Image (tube, rainbow, N blue to C red; front, side, top):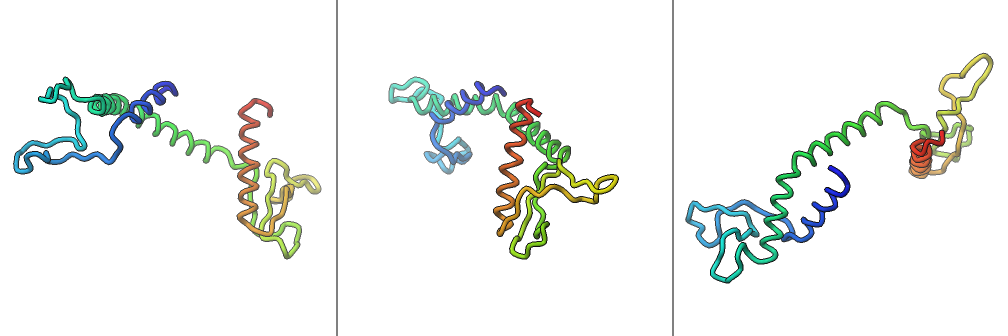
Length: 163
């Protein structure tokens, strides 16, 4: 679905009776076999002189129609986004990662943020999994926050075609 279609659907939903909705026996005749959507949509002319229901009834009906008509496209879109998200997670390791402990051998640091695009080269080649240290942190959660911010900035930079 396009952004415009999603925005239009969101505007329709905003006009509807707030959730939760329910499918239940009618409140007027609980012993009858009649079922209805609650809070309800008046779809037949009543004695109150509002053909097709009042404004909220029409908004509810339009919202139901829009949701039914767009449900398949919404599900398809969500599934595609989830698949793309999973593909991206599996395809590319995040550039900035957190290693628990100090890589510089200082006892006061709990975590190190490294740049996996900058391996430390020794002798004739790369020495194991040693990478350039971006920073070291007293708290591992600070390190994760820094790595997440750097990865976000890196992704935005690459998406902008500046790599």
